[in-house]
Length: 119
Length: 114
Picture 1: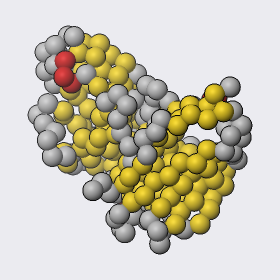
Picture 2: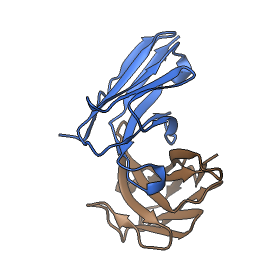
Picture 3: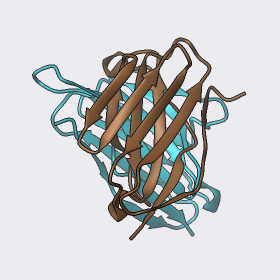
């Protein structure tokens, strides 16, 4: 149990366009979703924390107008990279604390990641 | 000083070897400890999750936590080429349901040679 499905797994877009990344919790309710960015051979960098029904909290240095996060339901959170530029090319990963229907705590489960390339 | 220190490696071992991966931390508030395995271009996969000092075993994997020394370890027995990946330690002050953020180590790149 406790699966987060992330789509797309990879995307190539032109500079100036917007890209939406979706993360769905398949068998649990994700009241909180964390969004990370990862550069090659580096650890995960937290970008923002979203809670269902409220505004996301962004980490220092992350532009909230560029990285729009929506967490309108308990099973879906989205990250939209607006007016993407080549420097936004990176690996984006979502994560949610998870507990299944019988109360087993799965810690933090991650999506499979989205590789964004802006050309 | 980073809150979590992890030797980035790379670490290369022969198949069948016992692998030891370690992290130290400075924040006494950390109570929950996790080890993740990450293959290239994939999201991290949870291997071990523990919230108390001591050992926890799952198949070929054993996680150790020593809160008094602020030191955690992951041991992999009978390592296989398929274990080749980056291993990330992570910890938090709250459990998974509280929404506490994770703090990660830098990750150790492991290669198991056939």
